[in-house]
Image (cartoon, rainbow, N blue to C red; front, side):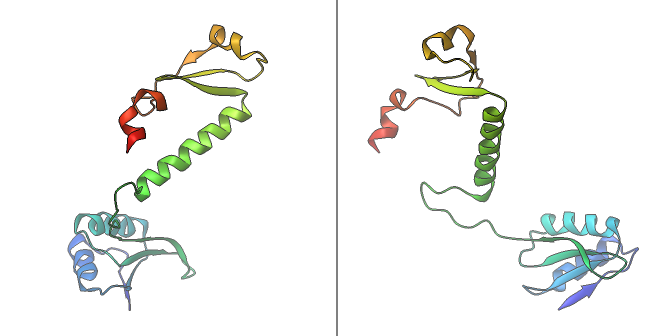
Length: 148
């Protein structure tokens, strides 16, 4: 079921509309301000399964958000935020390749060097240490990780 909010709906009206919805329902907002407040309340009230939609003048959905539970994860599984970070890292690595930057791991250090170098032995002269914020460690450095 869809619920339409007025252009000037206040926070209490928005909250009441959200709380009265069942899973799969949608709350339609006709203004950016009401849509923004509805998103904030959706998160604050921890409401899931409800969609908030910003409608344009023509009645079509411009933007939509849906409250969701984070799925239960087993050991060794990534959550959605972690997967998004991994995708972002992959894009950064694509940019490194495009800009002629290569990365190499030395023990517990990750370094960057110009891809134009043909002799990897010279790479240490030009290499820059990457601050990996302790997110990178060489496989040889943590035998407990390998043993599991």
